[in-house]
Length: 273
Ligand SMILES: NC(=O)C1=CN([C@@H]2O[C@H](COP(=O)(O)OP(=O)(O)OC[C@H]3O[C@@H](n4cnc5c(N)ncnc54)[C@H](O)[C@@H]3O)[C@@H](O)[C@H]2O)C=CC1
Ligand SMILES: O=C(O)[C@@H]1CCC=N1
Image (tube, protein in one colour):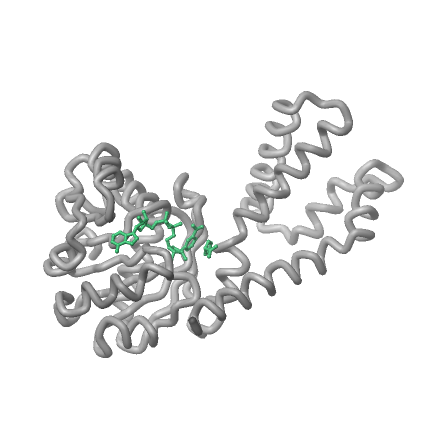
């Protein structure tokens, strides 16, 4: 059970902080069982203010020594140095959970210890408001119990799915990992479109954001196919079909297919680098 574990978060930035916040809010883990690392004094001060009772330190080696679960949330470019620093201090059997885009469980095991249980995870930033979408994939030495622990961690900040074929984690990264950025761009674009039609910007933005939220909630809560929900909006000869025709003319579907393909390919490249 997660509540019995001691968790160290290496590089508690956006994703690491979101997870610590969610775990504390949900009562999944008490603050005295969590250690979080950052490099700068300013970063450590921020962690101390935000999460009283959590140990904040720049000593990565010390932080992993007593941890039963180590969550790695640095950027991929900071990982090589960090892995070399902590490798000698990881106790056998420590579960390593990594959110690094592209980095495979095999690479993690090579860098940290070939026998360590490793779980690869791809969350997204709506985890900050407990609406994250996370996929996880187990490495060679991860048992069902390890996968269950990783599921518990990410369930604290949203929905979790398990992807058994690890190569699909690159597609997950391209879809839901990077996906919030696409939706924010849609919100921006819809807002500008409303402004172009004369709406005050604040009104256009609020309406755009609520429309995205409401449409997502309707799709989730009804379980209906999105095409059925779209048809419900689309009156014959009405306004929506004129808009749908424009979206089709501009290739909305193939634009998203190419968009996710580009991000998926970049995730693969990060894994190779
Ligand atoms: N931002 C996003 O939307 C998502 C990011 N990811 C992945 O999660 C990881 C973290 O991303 P973010 O949280 O956005 O990054 P971030 O840059 O906000 O956080 C990483 C933190 O690690 C710290 N750090 C770097 N090297 C360190 C070291 N040696 N010791 C201690 N602290 C160190 C940095 O100062 C920074 O505060 C990345 O690998 C990324 O690929 C995964 C899913 C979504
Ligand atoms: O842009 C990136 O590389 C990270 C991974 C998924 C979202 N942000």
